[in-house]
Amino acid sequence: MLTVDFSRFPLAPGDRVLDLGCGAGRHAFECYRRGAQVVALDQNADEIREVAKWFAAMKEAGEAPEGATATAMEGDALALPFPDESFDVVIISEVMEHIPDDKGVLAEMVRVLKPGGRIAITVPRYGPEKVCWALSDAYHEVEGGHIRIYKADELLERIREAGLQPYGTHHAHALHSPYWWLKCAFGVDNDQALPVKAYHKLLVWDIMKKPLATRVAEQALNPLIGKSFVAYATKPHLPRVDAR
Image (cartoon, rainbow, N blue to C red; front, side, top):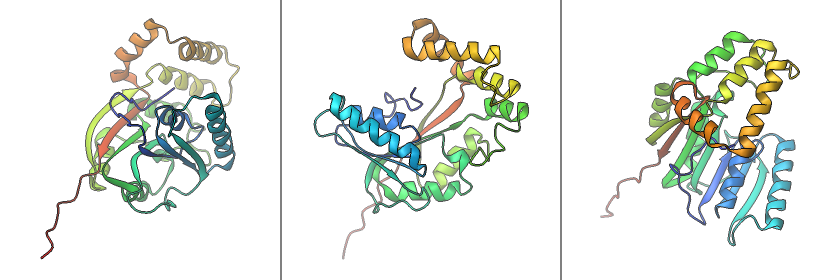
C-alpha cells in the first residue's frame, strides 16, 4: 500500500533515493522495482534487518531491473550519515509526526538533496487524525507515538521555510480512516472486536484484489476523509555567481 503517488512523483532509473524512516520498506521496495539506487534508513534495527532480507529476496527473484541497487541501514534522521547533495529524491512517509524536532529533520533532508531534487512528505491528515485523538488517548500517548497533528497549510509553510518549493498535494487512504476510528473506539490493542475484524478483512481484500469499486470509492472519498496528506516539493537551484 503506497502513500506516495509515483505518477505525480516520477522516478528515473538510476535516481539515488533516500527512504527516510522507511519502516517496513514499502516505498523503498517500489523505488527499487523502478530501477532506483535506494537507501532505506530507519532507527529501528529489527525493521532494517527485515527490509534488508526483502531487498535480497527481490534481487534473487529478479524483481529489480539491472543497475538498481538497494541498501538498508540504521541511522538518525537528525544526523544523516551522508554528504551534502547526495540524493536525487527523498521520501519521508508517516514519520515527521513522531519527531519533536521536525524542522531539524527537514533541514537534514534539504542538506542531502541535490539542487533540482524532489521530496515527498506524507503525514496523517488533520481531520481524521483529530478524530483518532478524540476517541483514544492510547492511540497517540505511547512511546514513539504521534506528538503533533499537522494542518496542511502549516506543513507547507514549514516546507517553504526549509528552502523547498511545494508543487503538489493530495490525500490518500480514505478507506483506512474508518478502520482507525473503529480501532480507537474499541481499543487500539483490541483486534478481536467484531467491527474491527470485519473492516480489517475488507481492507486486506481491497489491497490484495484491487477491485474497481473500492478504487473508485477511495478516489471519491480521499478529498473528504483521506487518512494521509501528501506534499511534493523540489529543492531549487541556487543562482549562479560569476567569478570575477
